[in-house]
Length: 259
Image 1 (cartoon, rainbow, N blue to C red):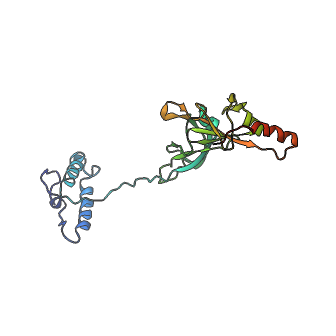
Image 2 (image 1 turned 90 degrees about the vertical axis):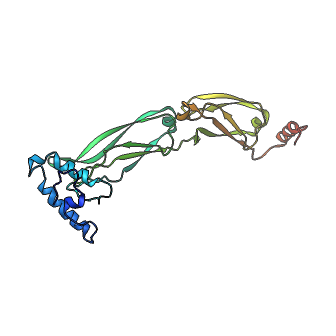
Image 3 (image 1 turned 120 degrees about the vertical axis):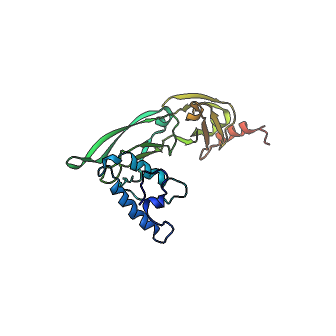
């Protein structure tokens, strides 16, 4: 075989095989193992710097046949462990800190033991359903494998009053027929517990909507600018009317123009 320390040695000459033959790959692998033992630094200390560099240089030349051979066994990484992170609309609107306890298997000197850990998640204002938060290597440990990552996916808890539509919030408002026709001032609840007084001097019909700017959800891509709170009205019609009520309603509706 050729001397691997020579910078001009061809790979085929170096390994002493004919890479064009039908058994070329087998012979190459066999020859490589032989040279590896011959020039191994533990067997020949004088070759600590020459042999690896020379073999690497010769095998990387254009036209050389790559050798897929390794003494190492790389540890595989399992698929991520997916968990849900349930958040209220208030938490997603104003931000919060969520602490989640996890249990996982850990390799110790005495074997595999179970360990408990608390992960802290800083919920940012404006996060939406499906937002992913990853914790690298926080999954179970087992021999021959890297620990898996844990990935939390945001889930929105159902709210008793509000429904989220992108950056907007929706709330259903039911009012009596007389207020819908004559106008009124309503106390509208806001996300967080506050209320806002809103004057309505227009006629409100079933399906009527009104937007209150800046009372929706924040958008982190627009410096926290908040969407709208959209009021969707449902008019409560009376089940029955007496003669006096009928007369009053007739008086209100007389002279109204319809288009």
